[in-house]
Amino acid sequence: MFEMTINLSGVYEGLSERFGEGSKAQRLWSEMVFHGSEPYMPMVTGTFRNLSTAASKALYAQGELIYPTPYAHYLWEGILYVDPETGKGAFFDEDFGFWSRKGVTKVESDRKLRYNKRANSKAGARWTERAANDMMPAWEKAMQDAVDMGVA
Image (cartoon, rainbow, N blue to C red):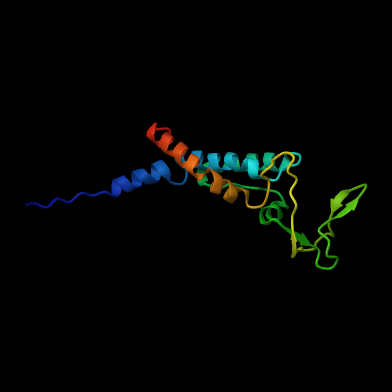
């Protein structure tokens, strides 16, 4: 019988480099989640998706998905936020379109948002979570394939 000591610290460093923040694997995973979630994102004109794509793309390797619009939080939550004084979510003005009183912090109401489903039939709140519920096995397989092929 004999004893042997092996230092595995290099293995963990290698794993972190290969799969941690800033890695190809992280970039691939974030990109897959973002694009896999697109059919679940609210969309009318495509502006929200386009802005989110541009903002997220640069941060895929850091594991961040960015939805950089002032209304992203409301879309994500799926709850209508309203002016606490008027109880309205937005006002429509023929010259200016939809607007809210300047400087007013809206509060959560008991009303759920209704999402336009023309462009994305699965559009709704918490799109990445719902996409993950539906797509996780396919995403895991794609990542495993990428790892097996040395892509990630």
